[in-house]
Length: 193
Ligand SMILES: [Fe+2]
Ligand SMILES: [Fe+2]
Image (cartoon, rainbow, N blue to C red; front, side, top):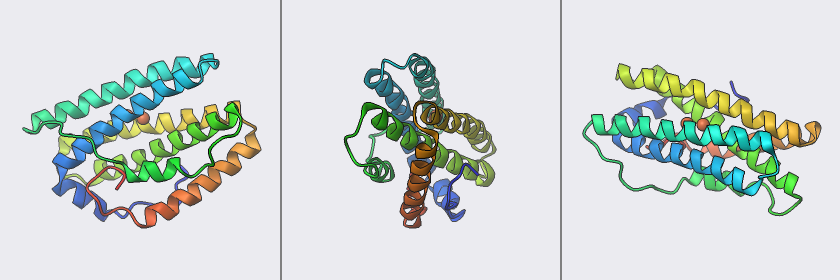
């Protein structure tokens, strides 16, 4: 599924279930960061009209997700709380060397964004299958579908703006690297932990 090379240990869903307040807070910030990434891509690459257009829509959609997660928190008597570092994302961002042409930088950012969507989608699928709270399970099922579409969109843009063969090679390398990171994860009460 989604090209990921290492599935999450299903036991992670139990950890998530027992710590649902922390999961929801962390998740809310994942949505906020997804919206921020979309806006940042607009500012960094304004010369790509189709990308700009899609990123406008995406930033809105991700803030819509943020609102939905926030509502789930309030409904359960919790408040948002502070954001925490996402070590998984920090490691991914460090994978590609800095520099290169603008196109190269764009491709790298699109691939990383696509991968984060793919892994988030996989985690949401687990939550949708494993949570005993039926309302939340349904909620995660709907979000899983959205994030799968985002994953496809980012990959599509990377292949459109880059050279197909090179983009696919980089994608494979990034997937391998991500699988290595994942070996040490799946134990934490965060969406990517
Ligand atoms: Fe989202
Ligand atoms: Fe997304």
